[in-house]
Image 1 (spheres, one colour):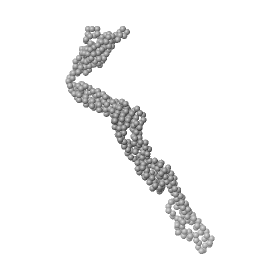
Image 2 (cartoon, one colour):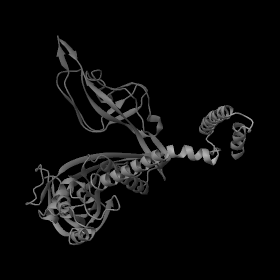
Image 3 (cartoon, helix red, strand yellow):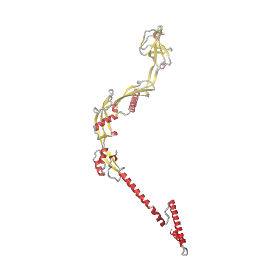
Image 4 (cartoon, rainbow, N blue to C red):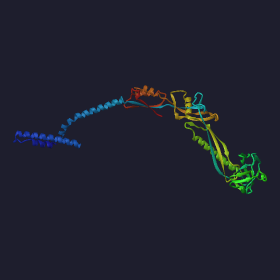
Length: 447
C-alpha cells in the first residue's frame, strides 16, 4: 500500500518548472482518487468476508467508527446476563427435597374374623365382614374297554304295551304270564301288572293299555327280534278274552346271548370310577376358580367339593366297552379382599393418622375354624404382616424450611422421625438458601 501512496505522491507533485496552480490541481485529483479507492476496497472486503486487505493506515481510519458499537454491544450483553441471573435467583428459584418415608413391617397373629352373607358392610368392632355363598355342579363321563371274559347266558328283553279291549273292568296279570309271537317265540311277563279297563265311548269299547317288560323264555340270540310285533296271551286261548288282550312291541326284543363274551370286571369298574370321579372333581374345582366374580376372593379353606353320584354297570355286564358317569357338586363362601384389607388396616393402625398402610404389601394366611355352608357363614383365623409407611406432612415441612440455609435445613430434616432418608437440590445451583416462598419448595417421594 505504501507503493500506491508513493505513486500518488509522485503523480501529485510537480517539477520546479510547473506553476503552483498546476501543482494544486494535481494534489486534489490524487486525494479524490484515494478516497474512491478506499470505498471500493471496503465494499469488496464486506462482500468477500475475507481478512482485511486494506493497508494499515486505511484500517486505522475505518476502525474508530466500529469501536463505539462493540462497546455498547458488550455492555448490553452484560446487562442481559445480570438480569437473567437475578431472575433465576429470585423468581425462578426453587428447592427440591427428595424424601424416603420411614417404612416398617407390622405383623398380626391369630385374628378371628367372621364371614357372614347376611351383612352388607364390614363391622370392624364385631370383627365381621360381608360374604357371599355360591353353589356349583359338574358331570364327567368317559368310555372304557372291558377286560373280563365269561360264559354268558342272557335272555332277550323288550318294552311292550299290553291292551285291554275286553271290558271296563281292570285285568290282573301275574309275573311269568306267557306271550306268544306270530312266529311262535315265547316271552314272559317280568312282574305282576294291572291292566286298566277299557273305555266306553258312544257305545263303543276303546282299548286301554299299560307299559310292561317281556323277557324271552330262553336265552340265546334267537330271541332277538326287530321291528313292530304283536303278541297274544296263550292262557286266554279258547275264551272271549283271547282276542281282547294282546301286547304290541314297537322296537322288537334285544339282548339275547349265549356263549363266551367280554364282560366288565370288578377291577374295570373300580379303575373307571376312580378316574371319572377325579375328572369330575378337578373340572369342578377349575370351574369354581374360573367363575369367581370380580372383586371376590376364593380360598381352599372355604370351598367344598363332593361326588354326589356315580353311574356304572354291574360287574359281569356283557360288552366290549362300558361308560361311567360321575356328578360333583361344590359350595363356596367368598369375600371381598378389599373388605378384609379395610378390617386389617383398622386393626394395624388403630385409627392413627400419622401412618398409612402400603396397599400391595399385605401377606395374609387364612385358616378356617368353622364353615356352615347352609347358613352361609364361616369363621377364620388370620395371620400375616403388612408394611406401614409414615405420613410426611409436606406442607408443614415446607414452612419449616422457608428461607433457611442448607445446614439449617439438614438439621430440620434430620429431626423428622417420619423420614428414613432425604436429599436437597437447589436451583439455580449457586443458591444455598431455601426460597422465601413455601410454594417454591417441592417434595419428591422416593420408594
